[in-house]
Image 1 (tube, chains in turn cyan, purple):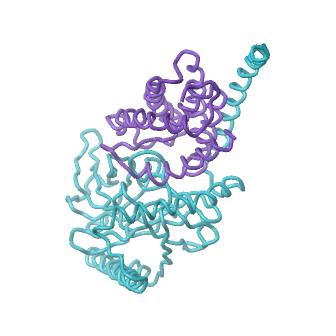
Image 2 (image 1 turned 180 degrees about the vertical axis):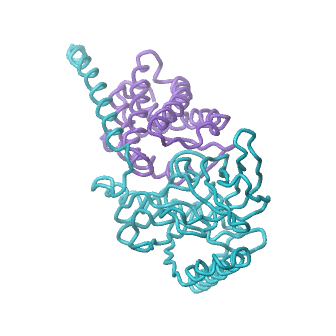
Length: 288
Length: 163
């Protein structure tokens, strides 16, 4: 009898509960739809509590998947490996800058100087989680404001090219920061319009779409000289991304009939289906 | 006691989903553990626990990797409520209805998420995923839903339910 009475009382409440929750959640969506940057206390606390567990699971996953093909030495050996890797990346950057000098000497002298004089501050970070879906379009790392990370910092990765050289490849950028963790949106995010330049020809363009784990875009100049295999780097035209970070390599292109624009497809060179460790490239406080 | 256990389930789900299952592609698709968990809680415990757990699970995901808070919370809330409403029409002793609801809910979640993302202009790879992986994901979620059903029946207390 009491059960029947309880049911009768609850039915209208359930309807109110349903609509109240729906309205509350919809309101939450529209209030937070604009970019969230600094996380509030509750969000920050939840992320901070989850982080060590996610890190542990990630480490186990990484260990399992890379056991066969990754060097696991003593801490000293690993340190040495990382130092060599960093040095290799720096040399590759210099090589890239020199290639540009050959392509366009007078214009790039200043840029080369800037590149060699700029000291990127890189901070290693572990990818602790990602949203559902095949690729690392949006994910979290284990570094936050306590480590000096701020919104807009870039996330990069040392990537080996077919010629065995290692370049600093752009992975994404920090979009919101907690105390001990941060959210990253990858360059595969369709909302990320990325301006680029072709290292060989210095023609500019923009990447505005995605195909699988590649990127699509077009050159601004309809007469752009394009070759399959051309390296594409960030243009530096926008303050979001500094110039000359490696984005990928052209794997196909075609000239559109309607606008004569050269549309390209890029292979990013970063395996966005498996990311375990990345590096945060800390942006300078003030950009010239 | 059930509340504490449900909180633990959601916590473990969040860790496994973000750090483990989202990294385990099967034919290009990833399982979404939250959907079968929310569906099973709904079917076994009713619309209010199901939808509340859905909202909390979604909110945790939104906080971690979402662009806007509430998108997944709202969708999991609907899924939990829908599954709970089906409680009267299906047998709680049979895992198959929950598996079928999980399959449908996965497709609903994907399409609705894509729709809301489109409204908020944050679409990512919708068409690419629609071409195949989403159907594989639906089947995977339904299959893991069977295991979750068995685990939940052992882990939670359901008065009057045959174990």
